Length: 532
Image (tube, rainbow, N blue to C red):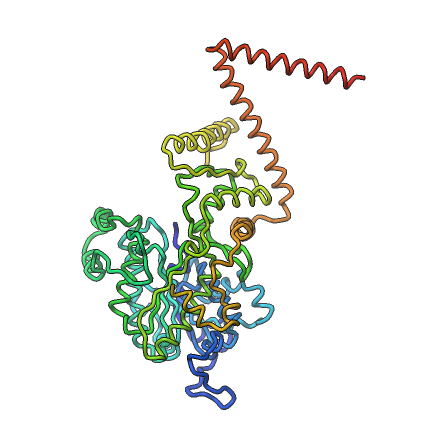
């Protein structure tokens, strides 16, 4: 899967004049003032903790990053400002990209209550692939002097990324960030976003950092000396039981943090498959085709109708708003732990499978039901999904549901002259106030999967595919026509099979003629009665 900006590490530079042409927020006071008494860390609510503090977010223009920004600005309204690292992209300057980001639909509600919210977003031109993230000296100085909390979301999330580039983005960038954090004079928390699959080579994964089979720094040194083709040839041997370079490098990054930043106020958050928003900022909001979204689209369009798998196995999805809430709460708790003088690296597994499991069979039935109710425009076939582990059935459904229709469709295109296309979380919740638990909700047991999946499908239709919901009646008519085609195809197929059997069986032939006689008698009777 392709990396999004939230994981590309393109969000980090702080330029004094780059605050969307608005004056920069003043530096927070060095000491408490008379009207705002100091609240001990052990009694601070989450929004109070972020009050008058500056936060540094990498990967802010991506899926998780956008929701994190929106939640911080909306629910911690007195935050001093958010430094976001941005690099130029597609002809857009970092400051223009921040303007584009602020125009996202997820900021609509925030814009109504805080019209000037964008004044707290401070764009800093830079790149995680450069030393000190390529920050200008003035921006770097301000970042080091004023940042209190760091959220490192940037990474590449492409599963098939070349190993050398994946290490550069997911491991070496973390080492560069640690170097910056060591020079931050006000640092209270460093929160790193990993993945629940960073240790997927293990049968049981606890909330701890595991030592990889390879020493990260030695691997970095060796790969740095080799040409790309040599690294590519070595990759399968280096990955061993890891399915891809993404999971492999995420595990390496965790170990690097343990070894190189274990004395810092550090926490690691491991979300599972991050899906569309559950409640906030908009139910069903999604802006990329990563994770389950591509599966939903393929099924909704009728292109994917069978998968190898077991209906009773768990598909671990966590809504993106849960992930954003978890990051914010972990920043607050990490500062509390270290202020109490008992700090140590804490890992948070942000998953749903252990408390509110969603099974693949439930996903299939709810997804098909949702698309029957709210179909996608111009679907190729009626949405359906079959899970099977049996090799024979897998090959059968792959042929009948995928290959055969594809060939027929390609032939039809050619005929008309067109070309074919083809936990620690639970412990933290107990420490949160009742108000914080309501605002920064973390309990995945509350998710009602059928309604979540329906909103997911609708959100994907509206925000990702940009389909107009006013066209739903037309889409439903199109789906009814697809149903008629399906029934007609099945009828013809049965007739052909039956005739083939008839040619080799007298009994079947007799039954066939008996059925035809009954049909003709019924037709004649219907005509006689209707003419009276």
